[in-house]
Amino acid sequence: MDKYPDGTPKRFASDITVYTKDGKEVSGTVDVNKPMKVNGWKIYQYGYDTKMGAESAFSEYLLVWDRWIAGIYTGIFMMLAGALCLMLFLAPKPIKEERRDIR
Image (cartoon, rainbow, N blue to C red):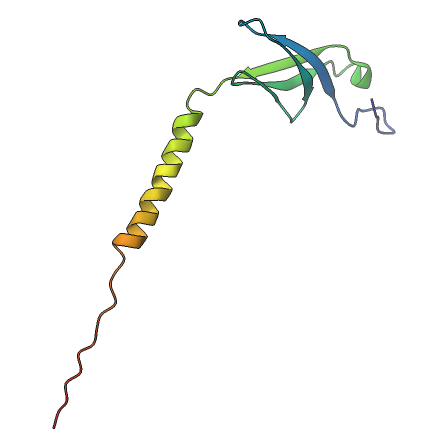
């Protein structure tokens, strides 16, 4: 692991293996701000033994499953489509000027 001159780690990552209910074995690396994705779950590096610093052999993980993410993206798409339809079909029409010849 790379370290800064004061001994703090430049990067803290863990190589993990996840065993799923359906019998799959998924291996990967989890960085502090780069989660690993497995079956819709995101696994974040949540913490480590700060007393040991770069020599830490202990990690904490945070598992997140967002069941509403598909609905959120669907809602955003629907709002964008609605705004586009309003612009295309309900935009104000240009006013045609009538000319009258006054003689």
